[in-house]
Length: 79
Image 1 (tube, rainbow, N blue to C red):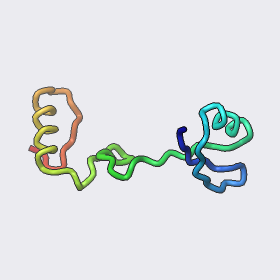
Image 2 (image 1 turned 90 degrees about the vertical axis):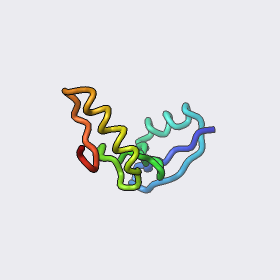
Image 3 (image 1 turned 45 degrees about the horizontal axis):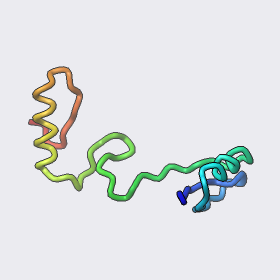
Image 4 (image 1 turned 180 degrees about the vertical axis):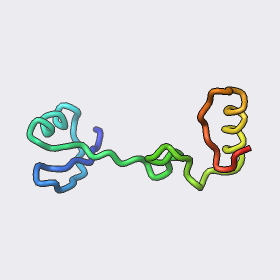
């Protein structure tokens, strides 16, 4: 069964394990979903590459950027 982090109508966060239909019913009652990205996510909430990615990953991104002239990919260490 999926788990959700939701805020009740008073704004208090709860971790809830329920079916999708039960979650939808809570939303009808005024609850809202809270999005929390995974802890080991490579992409930050602003779209920036987080500092824990290695230089090899930046090299790959640089090669992709160089192969596509209109690309807006930015690497931590611009080639």
